[in-house]
Length: 122
Image (cartoon, rainbow, N blue to C red; front, side, top):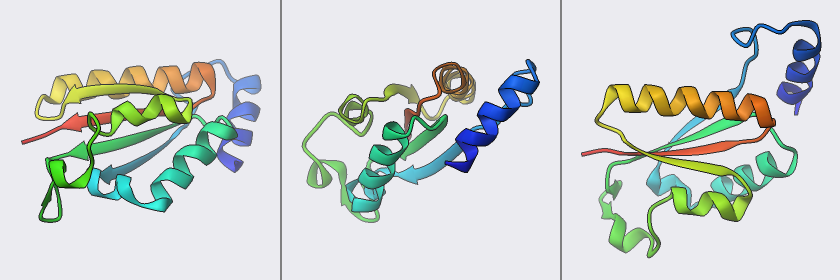
């Protein structure tokens, strides 16, 4: 919540978007099955925190394949349930990941809300 207050204070005193900061949380798709993940997504959406949830989905949670981990269409399909925007990107394409993070950052700052990115790797 402090991050949101700091952002609100900085946005009123500076119009330079490079000075505005957001938080980013990196995790694998296995972590998305934990209560901590669900709590963090719900909390960030509820208080409208400008942040990025970045999931690196390599198809395995430790040694469990994704078809044994969850039945849905990946992790990013959960984003609307939390009231946040979501982006799926080719995690092996450096330029695509950079563009996705840049757009997610801009969106998070403009709307003061979280964004979920799922980078499909391997």
